[in-house]
Image 1 (cartoon, rainbow, N blue to C red):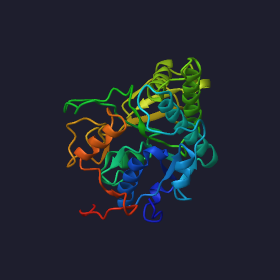
Image 2 (image 1 turned 90 degrees about the vertical axis):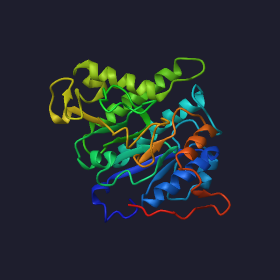
Image 3 (image 1 turned 45 degrees about the horizontal axis):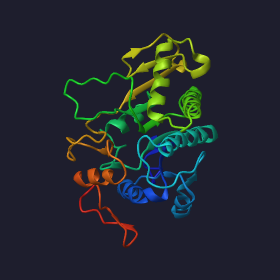
Image 4 (image 1 turned 60 degrees about the horizontal axis):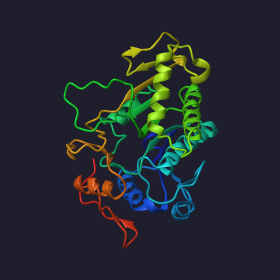
Amino acid sequence: YADKASHPEFGKVLLLTSANAAYFPVYRTWECWASRHGLDWAVIANDDEAYRQLEPDRGIAVIGEKVSGMVGWGSAKLDHLGRNKYAVVLSIMRMSGVDVIFSDADNMFHRDPFAQGVSLGDLIRSQKYDYVYQEELQKRPDPSHVAPGDGGNTGFWYAAGSRKPHIQTFLAAALAEVDRVQASNDRHIGADQNIFWNTFNDFRNSHGSKQGTFGFKCASFCGKSTTCEASSDMTLDYCNMDPIMHPTGWEEANPAEFVTYHANYAANNEKIKKLEKMHLWGVWDSTTGRCAPSKRKEH
């Protein structure tokens, strides 16, 4: 939050997104929604023009390959963007030890995602988890749905850098695997989401035998199931956000229900069509270069 004193429980939490110059109309829309809720954030500038356009207290120069233009799935450029966010998050944690929430710029904050009663905010506020992730679902889940804990979206997540130092080792292992995969083929492709969760599941299935690689010995999912026995410091506690409050682009999402909306399963300008359908577009006035006034009362 911009008002740190009013929200001391988030005093060591950094909200982070990323954009390049071509993606700025989407980023500016994200900015308008975030500012409506009184949030404060930083932006990974993925090219020089984005860094130039960002306010001085917002921009973070990218660590890794600069990427310009609109990019889609299957593109090495998109895969480089995925790699870059881990490098920046890890650098931030190593320098400051803060917690980081990463959100793609097409993941709009319709309401305050950190408020009391909201899944993400409550999970962070509980101080029980080292990693919180968004489920990757293509359609509205059945009421009986139970998250399996073996996969999710890497465009919206929280990692607690201040809780246990081993989270840095774990994220470094994931980054190293992304680098290994991207270096192993001529096109230098390798989507961070698949690689991250393959790494995570390798850790889960190791049952404590790969502590040297991952830092942690065991994983505990939402406080219900544990992959092996270890002390709290050696256990990675993780959990998923509620998928109704934090949906990933499925068409049945309801603005009356969701708090955030991630425009997945679409590329570039097709994302804008999804955001328009969910009444999340049009809050940035490109003529004035300012956010349009809110027409509704925020809670």
